Image (tube, rainbow, N blue to C red; front, side):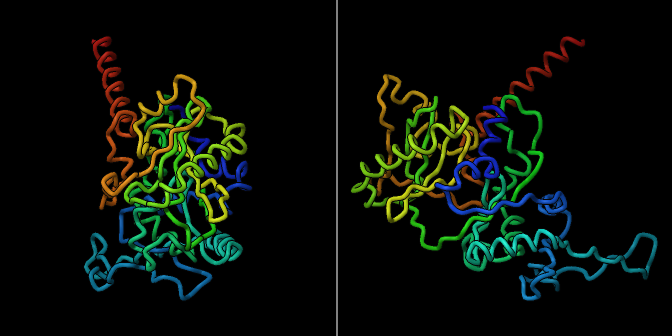
Length: 336
């Protein structure tokens, strides 16, 4: 995997090309001060101060009774150290407010690649539905998944030169409360050919998929040929789609081939060798019965980072680490 392949899967890169067949999204470049805020774990969990809405979430989400009101400065017995002012991002907050209003009053937020799905539990609704910057900040600060975007985006790359992209972006996607998880699918493209399609939510058996399997395969195959194949520049990649009630296919996301992308009901080795004899139809896999349901992981750690199978993110990371260790050993022996 190359850095350029990972970069093509950033939402600010692919969305302008596919917005006609995707979910309506508004994207804002984030100031570096906001990135520093997301990465700062030196103090209590503090939300940004709102300059637009006095009724926003409380600034601190923990009980202030449980913390000291002040600290004594070194060398003084009676001088209290002034607490740091809470963070504030007025320009970003105004842009986010305007975007949320134009998208109908509620959005689904994500960074360049990832959404804070692992922190939905902390929101008042138990979902990723947000109506203010404070709600977005709460989800982002509580998410371990976003550490991938912030610190580990290129860990699986053979030509890794940096640990993070030059700029980060906040994508605000129109919120649809009635989306059905049974109609979301991951599509696998190898050598510019759609080779596999998998049910996206593999922890549930959906009988309706048994009835509509052939129709769904035909819809996705046609969509790929007409809207994706000639536009996305990588040869190997995955993309997620959602099929609406009126059978319109919408692109949800793009992801790199392998690395920290889940292969779901396939293995990466299977996907690389499917239809090597020239069959043009993609292999479509769904959970066929309740016995085929995959267990869910009740953890804040992204499943992608727990997957150690061949071709997974951890597999690639460990291979790169072994190679680096061997390189350092050779350098040490040469210098001895």
